Image 1 (cartoon, rainbow over the protein chains, first blue to last red):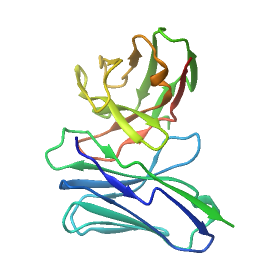
Image 2: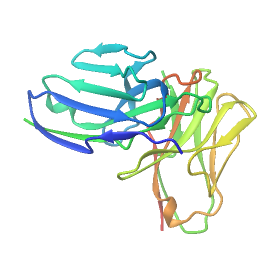
Image 3: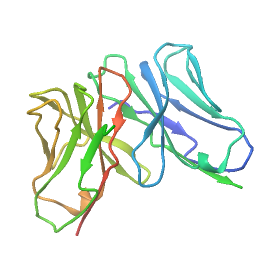
Image 4: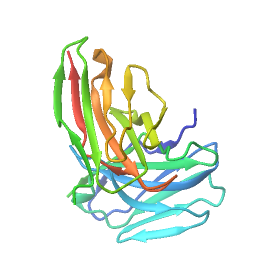
Amino acid sequence: GQQLNQSPQSMFIQEGEDVSMNCTSSSIFNTWLWYKQDPGEGPVLLIALYKAGELTSNGRLTAQFGITRKDSFLNISASIPSDVGIYFCAGRFYGGSQGNLIFGKGTKLSVKP
Amino acid sequence: NAGVTQTPKFQVLKTGQSMTLQCAQDMNHEYMSWYRQDPGMGLRLIHYSVGAGITDQGEVPNGYNVSRSTTEDFPLRLLSAAPSQTSVYFCASNQGSGTEAFFGQGTRLTVV
């Protein structure tokens, strides 16, 4: 089946550092979504991207829909302790079943104060 | 604002038992999905529905049944629980194809 490759798997950073993570696929996607999951909670949407080349910000978070439609990245600037959690990319590939989102395996972020 | 509500939050089952995980949404979303989350595996789609009366299999459907008799509810049934079904289960709903999914808080299931 279709797969998303999300990297890195985990990151340990110092408070104040910038963070970058990305997702790639061999298939063309027409939607890219970025979620954050806190411990014991369900994923919560951070940013949604619907057009190739789209660059969208949400506070300290910035995400882009790759021009090739096969990748997306998420950047977090000036990290703070509450950024800790698991970040997931998700997407619907071109031609995929309606409503069927595919998720990456997640990037676990740890922030040292 | 309830959003997506899952019950129960925690459950322990013995091997071979059956049970139903409940999911309800109050956003009038057409699409609903069930995912399981295992360490290092991300979220894997079990079953999904694009509307009342319509369901389809996802990536890991074996051992699970679903039905969608109403827009609001999408229960997940484990017919004969196995230890391999120990996982955290998330229900999600979204308005349309490829739109953002809203998740419930999850059900942590342990099968012993």
